[in-house]
Image (cartoon, rainbow, N blue to C red):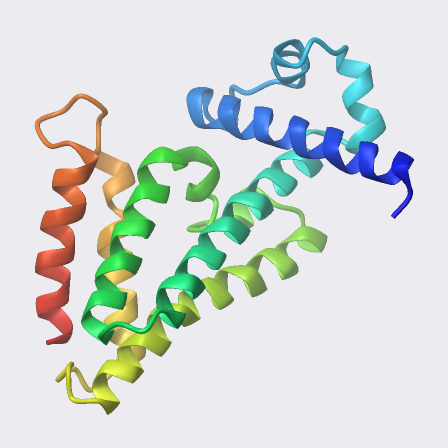
Length: 194
């Protein structure tokens, strides 16, 4: 990779990280290209050198966050620990993303409301890959006798559905901290598969 390509890639990553921060703070609809550019001491027009439009930038944001989450689940799955502990770590990770990256990660739930048809296919493929880690760990636990559940896919949908709902009610500074929620959810959700 040429130096100019490395610089371009680095600048795009910087813009994406800034945009993720703003989208998570203000929400997708309220985040503007002007605000993202101002955060980086750039002009709005400069952003269009790197991204076609706001939708393209938001797509890149979501792709980055979902990619990071996917890699984290993979690392939990590949760790040499019990299936129960793998699933516990995956639940904790998912909840952290659901809370800390709420607006960006939330697009995983209804991507058809945010992304164009051309963007939807790769996002859905990535989302399915992400969900597959939950299937794999549940199937592994079923095979080794740790889990008594008989429907891995249904189990995964119950787990993800309940964790994704956190975004509807969680408030920073509320009665329960993120860590409290992670502990409670992992304890209760593990009972579903055991």
